[in-house]
Length: 206
Length: 260
Image (cartoon, rainbow over all chains, first blue to last red; front, side, top):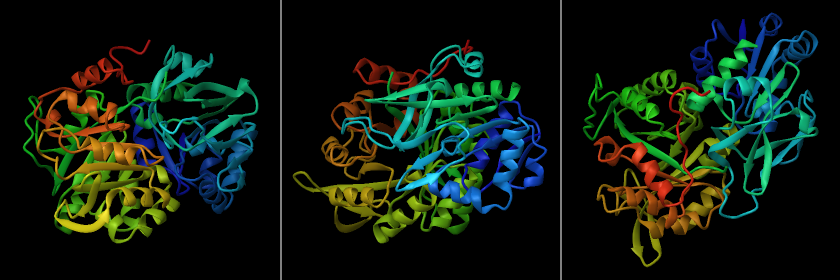
């Protein structure tokens, strides 16, 4: 059973439809810890500010614990999208600092492309270049343009956790991270047409 | 590899139907915005924009249904605008499947809506649509209600203000140029693009491919929006991409055939 976490911070409908188009059956949209305890695959979407998403996650009784148990304890496959990926970090630095899940070491900080012509938010299609990650290699076989919309980026403590890179002007940040059963993507696979669906399809096969 | 300029077909929707009499071959129902969005999705549009011009409450209700049905079949970023007044209107559109919401009249009437929406949903989904008419050299005034009502507000000052309040993107439409097919108001687009930190979409007046190119190279926009040039098949999105690429702009090449 694939569970899409509904904690008030995601573009649930788009994510759900894309997962179904990529081959998922039985997408369960929920924040119920009992359902999460039985999920084989878990998707955490997220749009907006890090602190708001973290607060929304904390506001659902037992949700954080259920995720820790099921993903970290029992090894359910996990995918965080956009802010859902950033929440994997130890800390989000966005108008103050907010603790994240700490599942993949690093922090988020503002994108600094280094030129006034390069606007923030980083909005639109940019290249994500895989680092040899199996899911990406199986899906794409090389770099692909995917859709980004964000002002902050994941700075992984260890390059080995970066599954794909994105470069924007003078800044280079993680387009995707993966550690064991936990993956996160900064871009929106649910809005990246065929490249996005192909990635979801491979992720679902894991 | 770097960020690409975006080409955005825009559909005007009234009471759940596309206006401006689009004539594509092979569409089951040429007035259905969902079918048209799907067509542009298949052509590799970088984003799609719906602007709702319904006057009635019922008409607006149908828009949510259109957005829902579009999100089921199009995996392309979708911006929706028209008649948005409250953060609850934002929420309804985002839940239906919109990625960004454009506000125009409401942002002028009550700029605090920009801040409230950016706080609640993130700046990335708050697009402020600026409809402006030239009033003097390097001077433009904001108009609301689809360009009918003057406001006395300076467009450049307004643009800076809404960005400071949390707008994540500006959709800049010249009311002088809209519908003329004589090209964007490049001076307006550039004046705003050069003075804000967020992306700017050029809009209003595209009649030929060179107009799209000029929006980027001379208007300094990050994205180009057009309606009739694509709807009437004057040009395809592929031709638009080729023209922009030939002028040195970075464009995305949608995937043809298998990924690998």
